Length: 107
Image 1 (cartoon, rainbow, N blue to C red):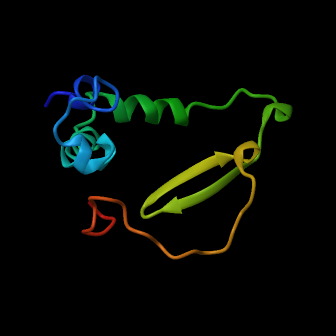
Image 2 (cartoon, one colour; image 1 turned 180 degrees about the horizontal axis):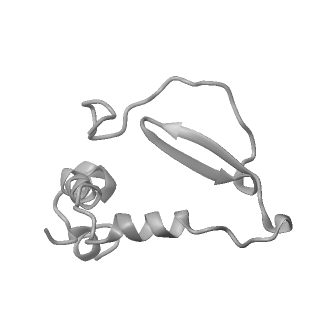
């Protein structure tokens, strides 16, 4: 797949015939397909072992270097954000679907 958005799309010369219909490349099915392919690709060999070793190694940081994190879960994935980037924690809101992804969040 070519990166048409870099050649004829919004990051290129803007000559894509689909651009008037979709307004921006991020609304185009070709762009969505490229994103899906990127996120669904196989991990490189040794990737999991490398990061397992990295996080299993004993920490050598001094107690003063520790920073608070907000830990949360999306589906089965646990994530964390440094508290320096958190401005507000709001209550539960309705969940909205993503464009071009109407089949649920498990894809």
